[in-house]
Length: 339
Image (cartoon, rainbow, N blue to C red; front, side, top):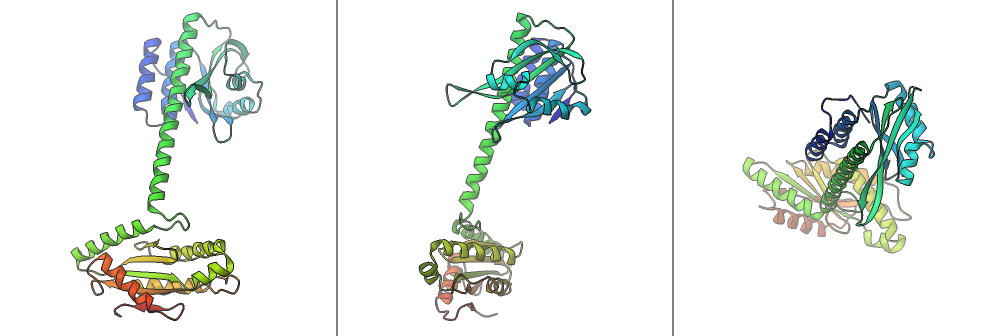
């Protein structure tokens, strides 16, 4: 919630200029609304103002900005409006008609004239939605004429446009971030997916080639996973995969990347030669997990190293898979080429 002070400039032109600047260049909604409300107060002579926004998740009003309201009165003012549907400001949000020139009481107890304007925007074509209320106040008696009414409605439309614009931008950003996470992660475990692991391994191999260093690749397979699914059900199998993923995430170093690349296959990309050490931490951690029914949870691992076991990512993965296919004992760790 922002608390602002009235600034210079007055008249409809200043309101239009301030509103356009706020919509075009403000970095956040608080700033945009503050600019619009300050310009509106200066143009109308209002000494008090407040913006309540409709929280779409809670379907409730929330005080976002005040002007000319003492700090020690803000909390009680918000509680009075939000907690009383019959309060003129709250009622304006409910019936979307608002009021102009109402006589009321200021937060400090003095007599005031108020104007409460619902902030209405188009939603889904022709449907209108109220996104909040803009309220202005004048000390004592104040007559709202036709010209000032037109100006107040225009100010409210600017505030409504700012709320709609910044909310749309926020939703777009959140969706883009969600899509990026979906593109990079495995939905069941939250670890990196096969595409991400492949990209990281390519980058790490290229860097190791330039620097003359090593990269370790460890493959983990869940022991007897098919039998677990058949006997305990796929839901239990998914739970086991999530538990294993949690152990993997806790066991690796910050420089490592761990991902799920198959039904019960996990891949660790570990810069340097510490692949076996990290793999041992993983298998030890998984061995401490509780059994599911009669099934003890364990994984077997195979570790390949660049450049000893392959000149590129594909060769490293192939070498590790070949070594893992030959493992017969559960919870084993094998190295393609022991160091």
